[in-house]
Image (cartoon, rainbow, N blue to C red; front, side):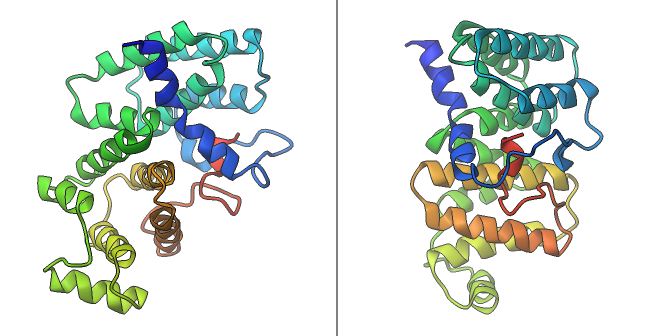
Length: 252
């Protein structure tokens, strides 16, 4: 199997986000986004480089060098760092496919013994159903939920025997449907107690929405976008984007 092809597929998910937001998210000058608040200078610098990126071999080489330096520094990568690295991989893939492949395999190997960090990375870099599965796992670990959380979210339906959940879906969203139950399930999980990692959850919800977009479940993607705004309004998760799109951080 061609690993380069896998890597190209892995990083392609963020292209969808860029296409969704062409109209509103390219600022005239660089501004550090909220999702990188208090993150390492090297990560912020990489994001700034991406904000000025020109599609050329020289620019790709510069991005790859910054990523390699970041990975070699031994910095314990957080989810937001992985988001930026994934964006860099996408930017450089056409000009530096072998180097992108090496970065992908290096980080994958680095976190092979950490299911949480490994799934954070896969949540950022994989696409489609692989992205969906990894993001659900990542959410479970971030929330310290039991395995049932992952199973229920993966196979949730409006025929659930969870009467409390059905009532919440009906009361909060005005109907009992697959979409409303899905939204209510996540709302309940995320508001039942204070979040230990609210920034991480805010990014994972966006990855979850992107995954649903990629597999054609745009009705669930729309529900997740509404849920993100709902949780931001209630200060459950932080506001990570300035524009109207929840994906605007992906197009620096």
